[in-house]
Each structure stands twice: as structure tokens, then as C-alpha cells.
Amino acid sequence: MYAPLWVKSNFSFLEGASHPQELVERAHALGLPALAITDRDGVSGLVRAHVRARELGLKLLCGAQVTVGAADLAGLVDGDAGSLGADNDRPLVLLARTREGHSSLCRLLSRGHARGPRGQARVSLAEVAAAREGLTALCLDPDMLPALREPFAGELFALCPRHREARERETEARARAIAARLEVPIVAGHEVLYHDVARRPLQDILTCVRHGATISTASAFTRANAEHALHDPRAMQALFHDDPAALARTLEIAERCAFNPGQLRYRYPSGALADGTSEADRLRALTFEGARGRYGG
Image 1: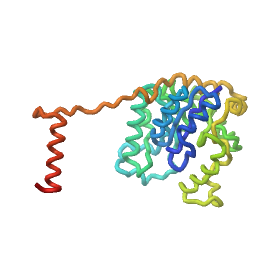
Image 2: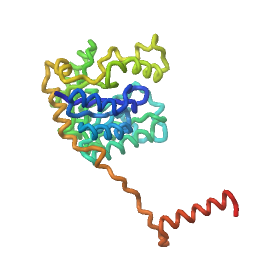
Image 3: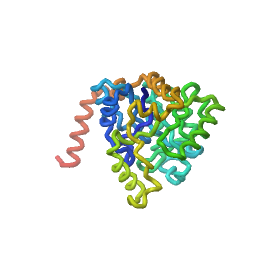
């Protein structure tokens, strides 16, 4: 058994090819005990996923794939980060263990979106480290492990995804070597972009739109195969037959994530006015004032 920890829905615009509820339904049908939704630079898909997961009794893990950019991002605001090359960007999966962790994640994403162009967010490693409270980090780039090891002590994992691509062997070997040197545990996984392999053509088309390419010229951007669907437990056991501990670790991480969106409550600021006027009276006065200005009388 395992829990998918790196899953993107269609709220990862022009990347994910399945609705959040479709991913939840498929995970439930496969008998999986939990599912993470980790959309790119956002948490917008969590609401729909939460509603369906609650109906089906599936544990939902809440997180996001954040984009880590250059180390000097902290001083950039209002779209300035848009000039930085995307070649420097690295993905990092963050999961909220607690309500405080979810708040930390949302603040981090808000900071990233404030400085990036519309629809894009970039944060620095220092900002990620500062937002560590209540978060678990799944690191895809082993070069980030040294900077995150101390801040995320006990909550940092080297995510080694497998999609049956030959080039992954060398990448994973390097990641494992660095993780072993730093005593960072390995966790198994794969990038989920759709709930069923039938969505692979749609995902290819979305990728073409995102990169302004055609199907015939998009080989540099599209995924190499259809290994980005939700796998059943047997398939994942076969994929990680040489490291069952890494697969079991997905369940350990899922168990530690106690947050769910049902814990959130709206907390509006106080509307008390200095002159003792109620919010309703003030709203009424402003409404009539605006009406007189617009319509006269």
C-alpha cells in the first residue's frame, strides 16, 4: 500500500488533466488510504477535493508544489521576478501537517505571487525555510537538501519519483547519494497529472498550449510516457520493489498530516466603528450616499 504525495489537478493550469474530485474518486476506487493534492503554486483545488474526499471517507493531504527560484528573490515585488530565467526554477512539494502549516504555506504562496507575473510564483530557499512551521518538505532537487536539512529537521524527505524513464536512474542515484550523506530519508513517488491513462492525450495538448507548441514539435515538453496516472498499490510495489521502505514512508508521512480544510473557519475583522455606529448603519449610509452621487436627488 502507498499514498500518492505529488498530485496535480487541473488547477495546475495547463498541466494537470483531471479534476480534483476525479483524482479523489480514482484513489478511493484503487483502495488507497490517502491522497495529496499538491497543485503548482496554489491550493485552489483543495476545496473540491476536500468535499469529495469527505463524502468518500478518503484522507486528503493538503499541500502545493512551490517554485523555488534564485536566492535573491526576497527584495523583489510587483512582478519583478518575471525577469528571472525559468531555468533557475526548481519544484519543491510542501505538505501541511497542521492548520498552522496550511497558513504558513498560504502566506508563502502569496509572497511568491506578489512578486511574479500573473499566474506565476517564485519563492527563495530562505523564505521556504522561514515558513517551515507545520510543513513537511519533499525535495525533488537534491541540491536543495543541504539548505533545508536543518530548518526542516525530521520533516525533510528526498522524493525520488519513478516514471520508467532511463534518465531517471542517474538522477535518482545522485539524489540517493546526497540524501545518504545528509541522513535525509528517501520517499517513493511519481508525478500524478491525471486520474486515468485515458487523459494522457489531453495532458499532451495542455502542454502544447502552455508552451506554444504543436503536437509534432512538442517532444521537448511533453511527458515521455503515460506513467503519470494514479497507480494501484501493486503497480507501485513493483515499481519500488528494491526499496519497500521508501514506499512505506509515504504512509508514515500521510499519517502525520492531520490537517484538513474542514478545520478552517472564516474570521472577519471587527467592524466596530469609533463613533459607535453599527456596521449595518454605516453600510446603509454609504449606500444612500453612493446612490445620491450616481442618480442625484
